[in-house]
Image (cartoon, rainbow, N blue to C red; front, side):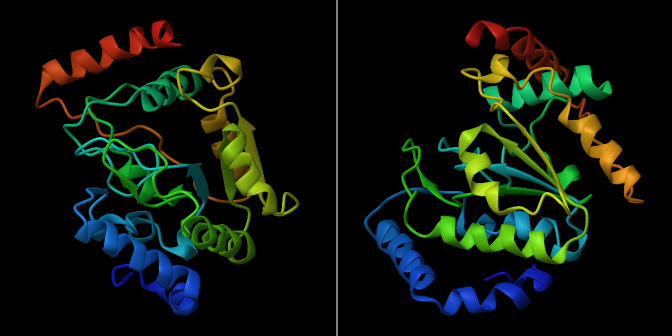
Length: 246
């Protein structure tokens, strides 16, 4: 595991020898042998680490649990594969991007271009079961991702931690705010977005901080794939209906 993430493999190797992680991996294997459908596929469990090397982390966006419907989760928090309908929380993120940095809404929900620029899209729990939100909470992933946050906190300089919602804020409490910028607000889900997420301008704040620290800003604009214009139109329509969902 982590063959495609050498910088992380070097520092996380001791974790794989610890009983908690061996028990977690054993639990996942037993669930699969019993017919449980686990998301994402096992080759995407560590996709966030593969996409964003430790020495390149500028921003951490902390999620909670992978999406639990078919075809959605691919190892990056809040992101879905191209061709998958943009989920409600991500639609609200797009709305905030539009007002904050002039973002143009794409016809997809893949955030891989952010990951390639140093945005670590990390979920607290890295697996879930089909149609069963939080199915793998409390099984050990939280300890593993705490270690990841600890490594970024200790080894990266002047990074930004984006903590949406109380769960992320509790998990990110270890971050040294004298060294890093912490941006906290309500979660972008339809249930809470209007209670402090929309209008919070996290994306422009990230870039202001990075520039002030002599780093390159994040280009938040995602590639706009127009091969399916109907998908682009549908995404725009979804955005206009997000408020109704809240």
